[in-house]
Length: 257
Image (cartoon, rainbow, N blue to C red; front, side, top):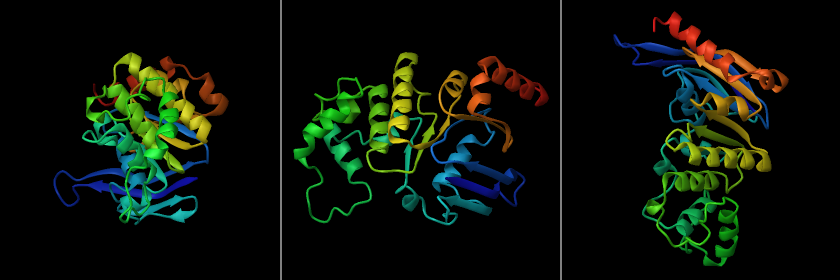
């Protein structure tokens, strides 16, 4: 469960460029919800994710995760219960390390290494089985450097790594935006599969309206730091891409575009 209560966030305070993005912003997300977030550039989508993850701090308000106040908690501590996949496939993996080394690193997230080996080669068969489920033929490339993989393969690997350890929340920051259509479809189906199998609470920011409609249990549309559309369950199932697109067009006209 995630609660944002009375969130205020200013950018460039005290300057001529001061901008209030969030003013008394409130949001509640139930356990197990898969929330798709859409909105125009500058609407607050990515800032919302950064606030949840602790990449940026709020000026006032409260962030509760499973009832615990994490408002002032450091980003690296929040990552113990949050998995995050970024738009850039390069950000979720280490390109100079092999697939085996990347998976070992992900599996040991939050654990002290001390002077033990970072890679347990006895787990090769277990890693091969995990990779086989991706259907991207990575199971025979454990010793290949991740930097030599395609963007789609790296993003699928990043998604797998983000959920290897138990996490309460999965944060998806336009994670298919940099991929070609076919690879994006593969990664989106894989995302849905992992979210369902692991019963994760997930927040996905996307510009792909079809994905926002087709996947997840809830859809939010943001504009100027506010939620202007919030549909879930049966209401969401009745939504069509054209419905959401018409709202975008109305906003665009209101903003003079």
